[in-house]
Structures are given as structure tokens and as C-alpha cells.
Image (cartoon, rainbow, N blue to C red; front, side, top):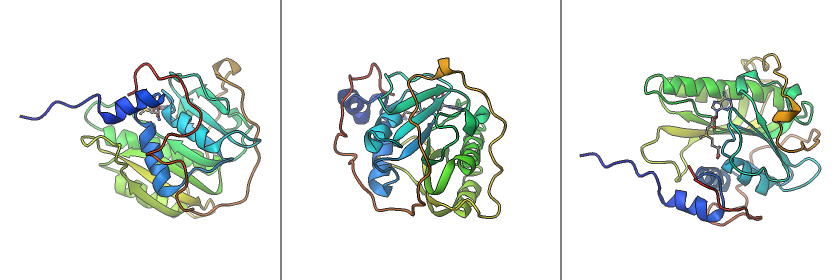
Length: 255
Ligand SMILES: C[S@@+](CC[C@H](N)C(=O)[O-])C[C@H]1O[C@@H](n2cnc3c(N)ncnc32)[C@H](O)[C@@H]1O
């Protein structure tokens, strides 16, 4: 008889104890430990940011500074108070335009996407690939040359082609399953570094803008500017095993 799914595993309890909004925090920390995608001073776009654990991790790594900050976007609000270098916007990634984002279209160093479709059983993998293709489309308009993308996809139809298309846009790209991923999950993270925007076959630029009203913004944006291209780097701090700096109150219910 199959064993029932364990909802509250060790990562859940650890997230609660360490003040993260969700256990997903450890997936990003483990990706960071392996690939070093985020750097101090980076400007980061976090798509599918709610309830907020990736935003917490990213904001701790990039720190405070003139350029540093995280812009989170989700259909839903964060369940945590946004960290000081963070702006959270309630919006649909498909209706997002660079001009509507804090920073007035200034380039990002890293685009993260933990976006997931509502799972219904059939076609979930294809809907997940569609979200990733939107991430690549946004990256083309928002990511600076040399920048990085981390995006979640459900392995299945369309995954191999998505990985191939991603590889054409980046110096290095790879599918990776962090240890914190639940064993029953089909999710995998594509980690792509060294953005090469001039490559033929790149997806079209992001579509028309949806104006995001100031009332939807949870905290002030960090003004940013362009930076020099960056190639894939060696993994850096903080460790998935260690606790990043600056603590928060424990969340109500880590997912
Ligand atoms: C697994 S959760 C993200 C967890 C988050 N990274 C964290 O660590 O707290 C997936 C999120 O994707 C968001 N999402 C799904 N489709 C979206 C879309 N089209 N635009 C923006 N957000 C979307 C959902 O609302 C949901 O909050």
C-alpha cells in the first residue's frame, strides 16, 4: 500500500524554526550553494514570489545597496512583511511589462521563477513549460547580458525542448533537482547562467504592459542601473546548511 504523502517534513519544521515563509527557501539555498547564481549587490526579479521564502533568501544574499534589491511578482500577496530591500507586486507574469516594474525597466542581474500552475493532473507539465517560456520572454527584455535565470518546470512534455531553447540563450544551462525537492515531485529547476541576448532564435520581447498601480506595491522600489556582463561563477555563500543573516519572526505555516 502506498505511504501517505508526508506534508510536514524536516524542511517544513526547519523553515518554521528559521523564520522562512516556506520550505522552498532551502531549494533556492541549495541551488545557490551549487551554482552561486546570486551575488551581493544584485538586482533580482522573483516571479511567483508568494508566500515569500525565495524573496527572503534572495534579499539576504543581495543585501542593501544602491542597486541591490528584489522585485517580487505574484498573483497573490506575500505572507510575510517584505524585507527592506524588496518590493512585492501583485500581478500576472503574462501581463507584466518592464516599464511597470520598479526601476523603470532597468536590467536585472538574476531572474528567478518558482511559478507553478494550479495542478489538475493532466497538462500540468505543459502549463509549467508555458510559464517558463514566459520567463525566458521576460528575461530577454529584462536581464542584462551575462545574467542568470533559475526557473522551475515540471518534467514531462516540452521539458527537453525547453532545456534546448534555454541553452541557446545562455553560456551554461542545466536541469537540477535540489535535495529539498519532495521525492514525489516532478519539479526540476533549470539553472541558466551567462545570458547571451543576441543569439538567433531568442524568444520575442515581452508583450504589452499592464499598469501596476502604486497601491499594489508593498514597499518602495530600489532604483537601479546597468552593470557589466558576468559569466557563470563559482558557488558562494550563504550555505544551505547555514542560516543567512537577519532574522524574521517565524511564519504561520511554511509550505
Ligand atoms: C510554489 S509557489 C512559489 C513559492 C515561493 N517561491 C516561495 O518561496 O515562497 C508558486 C507561485 O506561483 C504563482 N504563480 C503562478 N502563476 C503565476 C503567474 N501567471 N503570474 C504570477 N505568479 C504566478 C502562484 O500564485 C504561487 O504563489
